[in-house]
Amino acid sequence: MGPLQIKELLNTSPEKQTVTLKGWVRTKRESKNAIFIALNDGSTIHNIQAVAGPGQFSAELLQTVTTGSCLKITGQLVESLGSGQTVEVKIDDIFVYGTADPDTYPLQPKKHSLEFLREIAHLRPRTNTFSAILRIRHALAFAVHQYFNDGGFFYLHTPVITASDAEGAGEMFRVTTLDLNKLPRTEEGNINFKEDFFGREANLTVSGQLEGELGAMALSKIYTFGPTFRAENSNTTRHLAEFWMIEPEMAFFELEDNMDLAEDFVKKVITYALTNCKDDLNFLQNRLTEEEKSKPQNERSLPLLEKLSFVVDNPFERLTYTEAIEILLQSKPHKEKKFQFPVGWGIDLSSEHERYLVEKHFKKPVILTNYPREIKSFYMKLDEDGKTVRAMDVLFPGIGEIIGGSQREEDYEKLLGRVHEVGIDPQNLWWYLETRKFGTAPHSGFGLGFERLVQFVTGMGNIRDVIPFPRYPKSAEF
Image 1: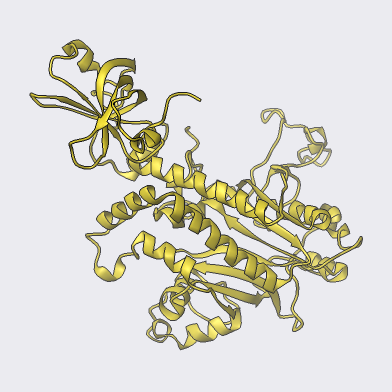
Image 2: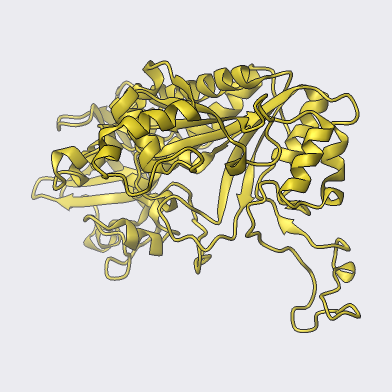
């Protein structure tokens, strides 16, 4: 199984046993009595200290032991006399796997900006901040699979290459093997996709939902968890061109069941992170507090662990879109014209409105339901009044919407009507419509952007910092 990792060694009782450490040097400092090397292998936010005596190793060897170099250290695990750790290693032998020239290695022990670290995304996982984020990202992904597995869901792998646009969200990445310098043309002069690999236009998927529904019509409860792609020219702190989506779909679930599941799901996965990522979350909380020191008190965010407990400990407030608009119209910021965007029935709520409801009005997470049909997708089930649909959005502090979902329209004629209404060619969705012809059933589902969840749990301000190698306009370097 390889050497014991630093995480395990730090929890091992020291009995002067010989141990082998492998990792990267965070810092080295020399005093006249000793040489201290802090080593980290990514298994934990904490380093282990290794100590050598003066003159124990040649100056030549010690010159190669610099921040970023990779070492194998053999020595005795002893009780630490210094503060901050319970054990340390008394070095017997040092082997240098790889050096890191201090003149050219960009991650020297000082504060680096997140913008600078994005430019060296191949090295940023070696920093405390990014190793913490990646460990939390792993824990959340594991918790997602565990939650659905324990709840009797089946993991469905929906296609990454698709000929449909689930959301009608527009901008998609095209998939083709055609030679772009010699595109085949039809007689009308259009590109002849019949000669392309799939014999038709194909794109990278924007959502696994429609195919997920097909799975739910056979397996009852499924979930997808995979990469999705949007070619929006969006340079914001909330958008990526490649991101991961979690989309459960459940046969026989109506709107109420869908809300219950969404609330239980986010509470459970956040609780998993709170239980299993304490050290990393404490580190990120301190980082955030430090970063916001210069901000006026009313602009600072809730301390990270408090914000996570806020979601886990409170029952989510449930109300209709219509009721929410009423609250916003009566609100102080609306009356004092403090909202940037106008409020009125029929608007697509902006995150300032969503955050007002969560942070100021209810002081707990909120689930809004029954949105106007015009601002929601064609597949959502129409309410009796014909004006609203059985949609549900889960709103969180700090970010606004984190989950969007609905009860799906199971009535063939109504769905077909909506398809025509929004201008989709039914021929492109014949297979989706057909599930409403053969054994249709009420069903519901929702979508959670995984990076939004990771952003919320880590407290990071920019979504580009919670995925190892972010993809956004003009950026696919790594």
